[in-house]
Length: 187
Length: 232
Image (cartoon, rainbow over all chains, first blue to last red; front, top):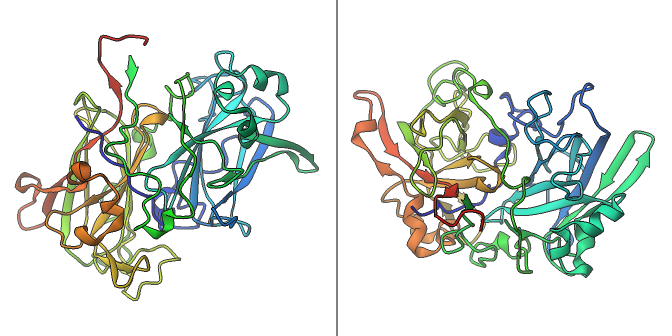
């Protein structure tokens, strides 16, 4: 059979896909908050902007993340950590995506990482990328996927760790075009 | 199991200049091929517990003081993998404009009335045969700013998960015989041979006599390909 073609998520996804974040009167299946006070692991905030080819922050993108837990497990059966988050860039005044999650552990010997899926008006097919962590220098150097990326572009996949009074924040912008264009994968 | 790659002969390209918003948003560098790891062969699981009582009935889930206006339709179809096997118990999310072509979204400024009894968002989970079913209102066409006198054809947005994160699909369902399809750069961005896959079919067996018309829309996700080339 033939795959059904993709289409853009368009500008009006919010009330369907992330209604609670945008204050519509409908439940959401996922949000920017992946953890509870009981979730094991290092609590982190993961944030950034999505920048277009003119350097403008995009206020109608939707970012999804998929990650392992602090034991390196996907879909763990023994906790309430779902590992999936979804956040639209339309509610933050600076058009940031913001995830409250935990730092994942290594999976299958890979460096700790998070799968990121990017949707927006103007993107007819969603884009896949990966986020790695700036404090995992040794692991990143050994990572088999990161090593398939030309060296001068690897920095586009590495979120920068900041220790703030509010906790650990990883800062990472997604750049759609240009010199600093984020690496997107054919997954 | 071989993971079926994304078929770039059916998916639209990132840059499609007739659709103006692609110009500054399309990735410009080639994608880097990625060998799948556990991170790609897993994905979130949303079952029946993520769906509320009226979530699959958009003629009921937004009611405040009466029935929503417009033409009632049943929209149903099967979610299949590339080998035609049903994808059971997978979440289907939809959103759409009301019968007048107006979205509930705060950013939508189209000069057409909101319907106080229509929200336009819904979800359901596929059954044992991979089938989903929604009751809704046929969405209206609406103008947009892409080019002079641009109108989006009637459509319903779909979001699917499938069996892992690489099966993720967001798409749009159109209606048969819509004269706007030939002018719509979002639809035309799909390679010609695959465009018909986005057009639903009128299906008499889905209609409800004296109540609603019916359209069938099947969706094929990447899924696994049962080739003999294991572990290649």
